[in-house]
Length: 197
Image (cartoon, rainbow, N blue to C red; front, side):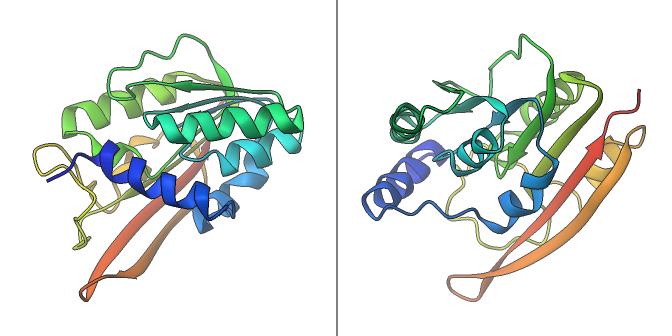
C-alpha cells in the first residue's frame, strides 16, 4: 500500500492539472480567524495560505508534497504574495519561531500517536499569547482508511483536541461527517482556540 505522502502527491497532481483551488469546508471555517504571521502546517496545495496572504497575512506554508509546494511557490510568485513555501517532513519538523496564528488542517492523523501528539504540543507552544490555533483531524468512527499508511496513523478521540486545549479560550469546537467510498465515512473534529494572554 502507498504511503500517505504518495496518496496526496497523486491527488495534488490531479488537482493542479484540473486547477482546483477552492477552499474546503474546514479552510473556509478557519479563514476568518487568520491574522498576522501565520504558520500553515500541512498546507497541501496552499489554497488557505493564498487566501490568508491575500487578506494581508504573512504565511510560512509547509508540506511534504513536492507537487503541492512547487504549485504554491508558483502561485505566490505570480501574485506577489508574502508566502514562504517549504517542502518538509512534518513528522520531524521543528518549529523555530512563534506565530500569531498556527493552522493544521487534515494532517496530524497521518502520524503515529506519539508523533501526532508531539507535533500538536509543538504547535500549541508556537502560538503567541492572544494568538489562534486551528486544528482539524479525523477522529474515531472514521471508516474510510484508504489514504492511511497502515503502519502509521492515529485517529484522535472525539474530544481529544478540545481537551488538549483546556487552558485555551475555545472559539469553535465542531464535528463533521462526510460520506466516503464504499459506504464508509470520514469523521472530523475541528477546534479553533485562542491562547490566553
